[in-house]
Amino acid sequence: MTPPVWRGVLLVLLASAAAGPLALLVVTSVAGRWLYPSLLPEHLTLESWALLLGRGRLASAAATSLAAAAGTSALAVMLGLPLGRALARLGGWRRWIGAAAAFLPVAAPPIALATGLQLSLLSLGLGGTVPGVILAHAVPALGYVTLFFLGVFHVLDPRIEDEARSLGASRIQTWVRVLGPLLRRPIAEALALGFLVSWAQVPLTLLVGGGIVRTLPVEVLGFVRAGQDRYAATGALLLVIPATLAIGLAGSARRAEAPPL
Image 1 (spheres, rainbow, N blue to C red):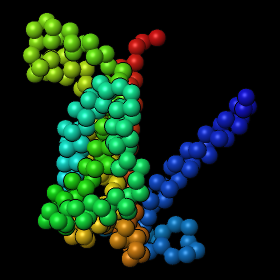
Image 2 (image 1 turned 180 degrees about the horizontal axis):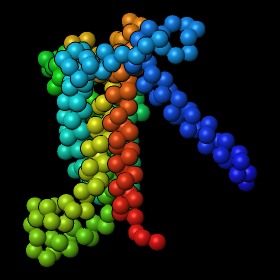
Image 3 (image 1 turned 30 degrees about the vertical axis):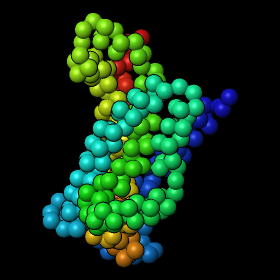
């Protein structure tokens, strides 16, 4: 077993590896003139954050990303929940084929997936539009969410639903009064999962959006290429916030539901 002193060293190294890049982003986002070999910037400025809170490119891109991610997560859950339930009720090779089909857009290289979706959405007149980007993002998000609900319904006893129906509950009443309360937390987690899949998408947005739909990851990439480190760091920090909140909320929910010792 690793000695306690080495455990502490490893924990410090792990924390440094996780927090170090974030700390550098924070400093860069407020750095004014910062030239090599200076270890710290000569002065600080909140210009990039003011643009984020105002009406600049960052604010507009963040609003577009929020709209696209919210639409993607809602669409993925609406389709992924019944698909996952249907797959969980299948058996044998049919479930394996269905799970493999759901996993394909998750495992496929993003650029290959984006190329195929671009051709399809352009033919529908949705290229370069936010609805087109949402539909493109929903493809991998639907794969993740379907597999997620496959696992949820695999461990959920189907006899609960059958008993409710045998006691006279209609299909709608069964969903609202029985399955709804049981699935409240999985649905919230699936919404967060779909949101995060869309929030960080770059290849799909670039190809399907055609450079017209400017989401936050696309703007961050543009700032990096232009050498505008302060704005790139500000946008990158904003990209980290939803994932951090999702992890924190999930951990809080699990601790709240944990039985007392």
